[in-house]
Length: 161
Image (cartoon, rainbow, N blue to C red; front, side, top):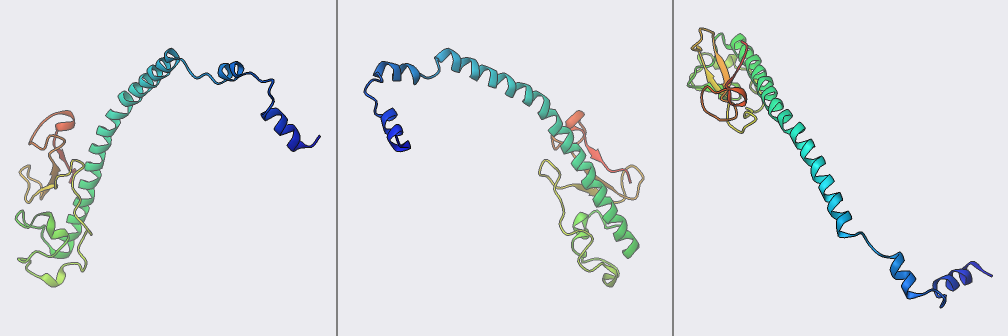
């Protein structure tokens, strides 16, 4: 008997009953489905509880890294131009030369950074020179709430310059 004949015989065997096919092809019960959905929900909850706080910490870490990059660019600006950008010029002075620059020929061609980053919450970083704390300048983000002050994730994030 050839392989094709054996296959046809098994497929179209009249001795196989319809009842047997229905019993073999039955699906999951509603109870089984509900148990599986409940277990998936529990696992999703555990993952969310453990992952969401990590995102908040990551956003603060990113803000600190951005501020460190901006501070480094400000130092390069000062080395080339002998002064920090004025508060009125802001951080835009790192991308394009300010119009009031005393010696524009000293400004680095292409700027000091390619593009100004926004903080992780989508707002621009703040800049002040001289800083209120007695330092030469200050770069900061107002945190998650976008308002001065705050605690935890809403706390302002300042540089270490």
